[in-house]
Length: 88
Image: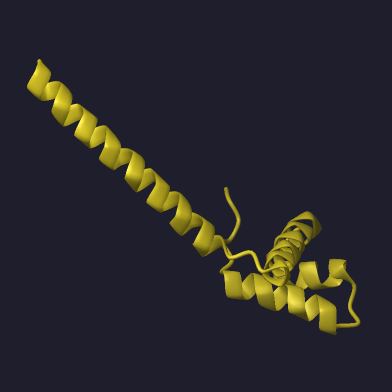
């Protein structure tokens, strides 16, 4: 049976608690009913997000650029398809 699903805010609060507390990670995980390995996975995701933020990488910008590129490809394929329909 899968465990409880935690929201992003809950994960964030648990990580911040670990930074502001004198308790060990094991104690915090026990209080919240999560495995220590899960905590460290969340913490790595948290740090990676912060790292990307400090590097100035904007995931939305790169996704928008990729989306525009894909739209252009779809447009070209649609035109080519219409031309082929007229030939056949």
